[in-house]
Amino acid sequence: MPSPLEKDPGLPVSDPTVPFWQLPSHPLASTSSGRLPTSTDVVIIGSGMTGCSVAKGLLEGDPGIRVCVLEARGLASGATSRNGGHIVSPSVGDFAELVECFGVKAAVEIAEFTLRNIEMTCDAVAEFPESTLATDSKIRRTTKVLAYTDQKAFDNAQHSLREWNQHMPVNRKDLFKMMSSDEAEAKFGRGMFECNWDPAGAWYRNGLFKSSLLLQTARLRVYRCRYLASKAAC
Image (cartoon, rainbow, N blue to C red):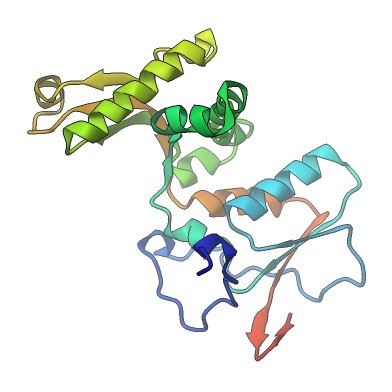
């Protein structure tokens, strides 16, 4: 039986529900650049977090490149719009397993990659201090608290954290803190089992603010495509 990663995701459904994060609708949600060009350098399918990030990287890396983004519905209206806006790294909890599966070197590289994603996401907004991106996206640096409901899960997390502090670079050590249930209740004012406390970020409408940034360049074109039977029309 194929795993979810091996299955064909199929075409977007014709009547999607509207997630909370899309209300009210962003002014750029229904934007489109008009007719498709006869040629382009890169075509990106989907205008969510991944598509926007790839487009931003391409446009910044090559001053002459032309990019077309194809979107079935509104900008960043798919999985990106259904994300609650958390900017977190799961790598500390997964670190021991990553070491076991891929070795220390690869585990460190994967963990660094996830942490840099948090930093670069915040940096992307800070690049434009005069704009309203920070205000509109409501991005902010904060702290994530993860509570464990059973001792085994907490023990596994403690083991993973020990591996983390042993192998990660000095500047990444001691970023995460484990608390007992008593410490957690004293700090957060409610009954909790053991928890870990680590740096994170949060934002609102995480994909749309990047889309609005990217649309400022003439080298980026966005086209809304509707799916009819087995062929797409733009």
